[in-house]
Image 1 (cartoon, each protein chain N blue to C red):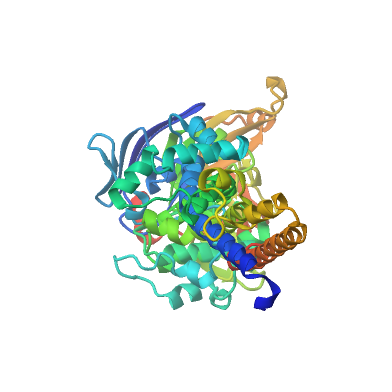
Image 2: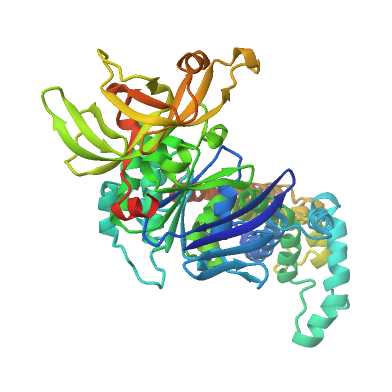
Length: 380
Length: 233
């Protein structure tokens, strides 16, 4: 149970958040928002590096800060691990000394050095100095150092933001392993929806120092009213899916989703494996009759749930060509079509439609770990 | 080896080194404290304190010597108390020379250390805190090692300033051979003495040699420290 209710005023900005997260099981909670929206300040207040003006921070029943009761536990006693965006390795120590810096905590070691160096694949770096490491290696050592300090909860502040694409791809699997193998709750700060979808179960959307929405990742990313915050290029929806079958003749994998079967290019995942599927709004087309003679592999039937605002293009209403529609296919699916199509098809809320999705529109960048069965039960 | 310098020259050299070394050791902790105060904290009167620390750099050394005499002389405000309470008198002794040199060196040492403290990435200290380090541990294991090059520079400056100290020393503790007559004071005495030119030249040579050795030694140490804290050379 994480309760963060804090206010903090800055000269040109104010934070006023109230989040209660019921995270009984280890999982990743994403704190998502644009740069400068106050995400880092919020976790700094959780870690005790920034003092809130008023409020309360409680983690698993431990009151870390309470302005009314005059409680403010100093950071070194909070037992909260913090992975910073810029690694912050101690330059005057070897990798091994860095890793063991916080390992002397009295709460007793949950993880052994060997276990962590193996998990993060940093065993061969132990005698090096931070200046001799690549960006990705630094970040892995930083993650290892934090875990070895035996925290109760892990805060990660955009750990991938300072890395290029290849390095990001190098670290992401390690963060997924932390989540899956260490049973450690994580609060993950990010401004990349792609990362959030791949890693998190629950997300908190932050805007201008306030919480705009919070809840299941799939639900938040499919809400049209949050569209301006989740972003123009990232518009899409998230579906829970399990691997149902494979079609070796054509190299396809068949996924079972709430909207029916979806065929995607072959995935190297076993049957029964659950995952999350992100479908970009621009990759979906709509039809009012079931099309025949089409190359679309995935044709899902549903009804129009919501017709969103026009998508502003140049600030000139007449020039706005696109609208966004939410279709209920058993789960919400965001679709982007032209205004012309909307009128020609005569779509209204409740109209039956078919959603057409190209199999090739779904690639490994749009797939994330599936919600565990217990999560699926909780949020469905 | 002993033939190289006369007994009087040895005496002046040994005294100079002792005074410089003791004044440096005394100056360092005080300078470190002031450097931290000025680099990390905001408090009323900060500009005044900063100016006060820098006084020895801008007023004539004779003024500092005079103030020390007024303050720490046998009949001075602090000096009388020291003598009455502990029976200690530092005016006109080598200890007084060390005090004068330390006061003159203080602004240089504070400046060097303050610069080093201000350049420490506070984020590293925050990281140490979140790893469970108490404030003392953060200081000892992160801050102190990272500012050690600045401390070394401060130490060298303090040592060099002490070796060359003249005005405040001669005013405060006079020019007593074997007690307060350091190399610069001995050199001054020789210049004042008819026929002392050759001796003066030798003392000047000794002075230059000591300074060079000290600088080279500190450069070697600085390189070693920088390497040990993982900085590029």
